Amino acid sequence: MERSEIVVDRGAIRRNAARLREAAAPAELWAVVKADGYGHGALEAARAALEAGASGLCVATAREGEDLRAAFREQRILVMSPLAPGEEAVAREARLEAALSTPEVPAGLGVHLKVDTGMGRWGMTLDEALAVPRDRVVGVMSHLATADGDAAFVRTQVERFAAVTGALPGVQAHLANSAGTLRFPEARFDAVRCGVALYGLSPFGDDPAGHGLEPALSWRSRVALVKALAPGESTGYGRRFVAKQPTRVGIVPVGYADGFRRGLTGTEVLVAGNRRRVLGTVSMDSFAVELGDEPPGAPVTLVGDGVLAEDHARVLGTINYEITCGINRHPARAVGRVVDG
Ligand SMILES: *Cc1c(COP(=O)(O)O)cnc(C)c1O
Image (cartoon, rainbow, N blue to C red; front, top):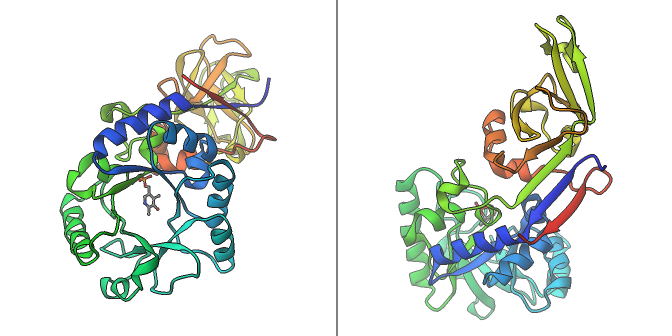
């Protein structure tokens, strides 16, 4: 048995994409598959989203776009972050579209004018955008800073963006991420760029089911060794868990090098279907879990089967995005499998 197995359900991605299309209509759905599809595998995620009617793909880097181009010959692929020096040739060769944060247009590329309406990150001013020759402009975009929170600021950004699109009639306009798509109909414009929700993760950090979303990734391992701790004995670095009474613990061969973060002490996983706490310090290659009477070899679900990335994120004080992006899919550490459920 491999150390752990990462299973991605294409059916779940298709259903999430259908849900997002419905929320976005009549705007188009573009699938954001940067960072290897938020840790799910960019190619499979893109394929499933396109099958469900997504009409474009978005990535963060030209190399990510190049990888997708090999599989999707005709699909629109947008690189949302500025091209790094030397990436223009890659983008041209792969026929990618590029988001511009300055008015200099790279030769031979269709470009999206990225206007900063309040994110305060990438993007140019409206005046700069209007200075760009229109012949290679295929889109105008901006990005929401608070779609998972401050609604008043979303409305400010929508108003600013509406002014931008008004000054660029006939140019395809896109603003909303997953949270914006699900929560703000007025943010939809001509297309929406959805990432996190496509994977069945909640952009609001709560239970995805409440938004009609279904987690697509499961991560499972096994109790590789059972230990019986006598009172006073401990497990793991720093002796952070010391048994007060006779305690059975299971050692699971997954650690922070696999993406099961070191701060996950106390989070819950499933052992043979029972919710059990992670005990002591998570090591690089293993962690310990409390056991009832589960035997050696008992299946352990780290994510999936009702254990949510959102649950682990809460323990870590981070967001679900960081949980799945951090899972190490290298074949030397885990086995990847795709199912169609
Ligand atoms: C990552 C990203 C998105 C997708 O955001 P989600 O919250 O995952 O839906 C959309 N637009 C831009 C510019 C991004 O960088």
